[in-house]
Length: 240
Image (cartoon, rainbow, N blue to C red):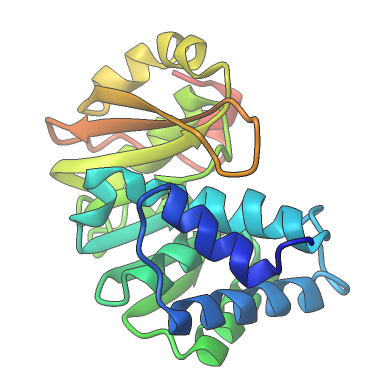
């Protein structure tokens, strides 16, 4: 007999050593429903099969909780959050964290505001904007314990977007695929310049899937120079 969506989610969390309550499973299922409903009118995800959604979106996001730096931090920003992965599933499991969602698409921010209302999520802010601009705003710059990103750009671009948001001793946690080590070599100058230091790479065994999945943890050891991030478009056009 095929497992129900709720059973896949519960069992996947159990396999990763993560506790999830019935109420949290209910919220995850509601989130899935909202994403797939809105996906009919805007491009949020190419994954429409329920089982794949649970594994490749929900469990993949939740896998970040196998990282101690994610469990222990209180003020988090998700850069280029899109449909809210990994941040919304993490917020459901860590309700006391303060979470900022940043995306350059106003439509996606409108969607995320609806998600927060529907799920009754508190201590959460959804911002329409660019990392290059917000990273120079002192209300956000070097204010966060944890920055999340889910492979939204090459690593040498991503660190310029993300590290300026971190406090010194904060952590940048990034989900990446099989070429991560290669990307880190390319990004070494950017990581060093922006005050980061690679702490470790965690290999993740995603339940029910045979995927080469890795999580990179970078610690902020020095303040980022004030010239970074550069103006909108510059990090992409001329990576460090």
